[in-house]
Length: 329
Image 1: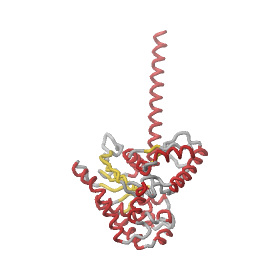
Image 2 (image 1 turned 120 degrees about the vertical axis):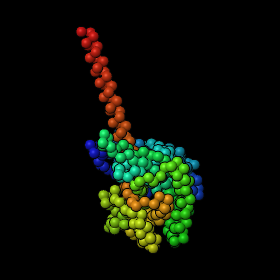
Image 3 (image 1 turned 120 degrees about the horizontal axis):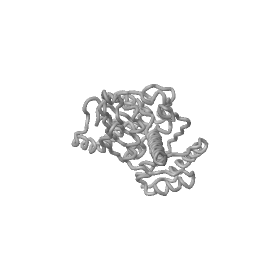
Image 4 (image 1 turned 60 degrees about the horizontal axis):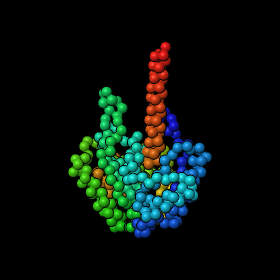
């Protein structure tokens, strides 16, 4: 932890596709669980070497809906020693906003934060209080409403295809996501929650970071260049058209896509296009941060609150001891 926030001392990520085949089967597959446990075993080793004493470990949509989600959690504990917690969609949305909050433009009145995952997509409408003369530091963004769509890049690509994606297949993906988004759009409208003044989009996921890397023409993915960058939905559309024109092998060979995302990236583009149609915005901010940072910041805040309570108890104890001494004298 630093005065400015925190410093990353180690990091690790791997695409494991835990929800692969989940839609058709209703349960997590053996190969997907094995891949996930192999990755978690590496995480457990890193945590042991770094002497991690406090952590929160979460599982999301795949474990929420799989018939054997609880069994997978138990297996992870037995094989890696890690205790995963299946979080609710609401908790997931709050953590995503917390992790991305520093990237929200406080000169805007509101923003749509979205997290395109493998099995679900979270949409969170937030409003932002502007600084005032007697309160120069703005309060945290306020979540006005949120929803979780039961489709992500893995589930959408499995339904429509991800290796060969002709234009009509891509259009069907966009249409499906648009239909899923429509009830949330209507709910915001009925509650009179919507675009008032300036707003922007903020995306956190492998989809938006990949798109940003392609747009920037990076010879290899660079988090420092991508995290926090501003692009326009028109830029995303240009990248999407370029990816649609590529073969699967071309996408796999692209340094900012790679073989792990080559069959998923266009499904992610389709989800973003549906979001951009529902909320036309001038700007999109890209976040290479999200749930992990949200978890870390929430743990830091809990520690700070606990330390404040301890200091208050010590001060009360000191005052009581002083009063007792004065009475006795």
